[in-house]
Amino acid sequence: METLFIIDTVSHKELIDITYQVEDIIHKSNIKAGFCIVYIPHATAGIILNESADPNIKTDFLNAINKAIPEHNNYLHDRIDNNAAAHIKSALCGSSATIPISNGKLELGTWQSIMLCEFDGPRTRKIIVQVYQSNV
Ligand code: ZN
Image 1 (cartoon, rainbow, N blue to C red):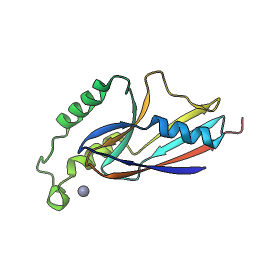
Image 2 (cartoon, protein in one colour):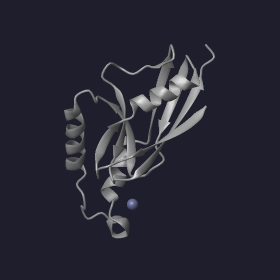
Image 3 (cartoon, rainbow, N blue to C red):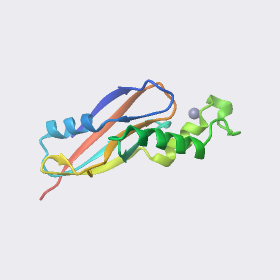
């Protein structure tokens, strides 16, 4: 089963918790055991699993990744559309997460959330969720 939802980001760089939207899809799928893939088909955004209960983690994450990959650092791609840093951050974060489902729920750790990473916003982002049922 595949479904998708849209998130309109509001900042140039931000982390957005999308756990609720994915949980809603799992609930509606009625699949009790299996796994899901959460995938973002964009080259300047990413998907990560991390804590969002403390919003400082989002700020710390963005500060750290912005320090590691500064904007406009003589990147060749900046000559084309001026967003090379966003592409590099997207590649490092990855574009998907695979999460087991048990008893109809995502098997996330207590402090884990699914987050969309926006690195070149604001933009309209599509998130694809595929849910698979296991045979057990
Ligand atoms: Zn580009």
